[in-house]
Image (cartoon, rainbow over all chains, first blue to last red; front, side):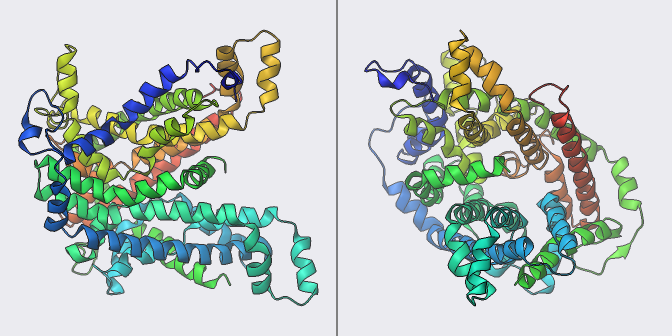
Length: 274
Length: 280
């Protein structure tokens, strides 16, 4: 935005931004440092750096709790939700944007209304439904309420509306059906909104805590967030072990975020520009 | 084409909403069949001192968390909105908490804010400021949660503001500068007022999330010490899943729902009113 960057002289803004960035990173850096310390080293005042780097803490955390299994559960649950949201949200978004069916208006407003309802309000009834379906404490229980999200439908509908109808009309005259039009012509144009739906679904399901807490109880069905919380109550003040576990639980998303920062940022920014 | 979505949304969207209202007029322990109790749950809520406290804590939390996060986000976004070396790294550092889970945030801050061995107290001690019990102090626990969640949300706010700032046409700023306006003045007088819709969205979004605070409380204080951090959703959770008063919890959920709806509508009204203050 500013034109300061042109000159050779470093911008004075580094003096603001470097400390700011450092301050924001303190919690994560301290997590890393602690994860490589001994327990004795965390019981010193004032705190300091570890004498040697104890990578064994990670091994120990990995052995003491099924982090691998939890990460896999999280990946299965959020992966399934991402795929089903991409599928269902584009189908429904297309229908809401283009097909005139009876009760469309009503269905659309009903959907928008559910968008406004906080999860805590529907949590208990959702649990009772899952119970009736016999799914309590299973991975499907974590998946089914998130198979399709009203926000995704809404977002994709807006994008379908912004595309010219002529595009579809031309294809339909040439004999293409609706599904063909959708998959061959429209969806390839929607890389950005589909990425947004994928990223937002992934983040919200991966980082969700309350629903897994309510609906799962055995370690083998837990997601990594709930697993981490139980790991915390099991090793309450063993900070090196706890920080190693916490770091491991965050690593996959941190990694994805660092390599795909652009996509994450533009997707999250979309929430603010509705 | 639309039917699978409609079916799913009906089952996991509409049905639970209606059911939540129905539940709030029932006694339900999640095991045995429910029993009608009329308005009993709501009457009980009116005389429940813990519920009243949980509302107070939630309001204190929201009233501090939202403006602090909003202002810090704006300032940080303003600082990040320039093309200099390492800016991608600076942004990465600020945005990383956005993808850090609430549970991880809670575990990490429990360690940072450990009264005895945490680095925050060590730093406070070093610069001669009073230390604190943080999560173990009934006076400070709620404020510790505010500080922790501000860390978690400033990146999100800055990201949204930054997107807003970048959509302000550059010509506007340049024209103002030609007219002798300093960069700082241009930021506060031109860019910030243009961010009004973005600010309105953020206020609503942060408020909704603040009123729903749960994860961070569960991981750090479990509502304690001495119930000093029992917020509405935490109380709801306890009633439903620790005491199996699901009907009573549903009544709390309905009250929360109505409160959030009212607050959102009021905020959107104020944001739309051109005579109102810019960032509310």
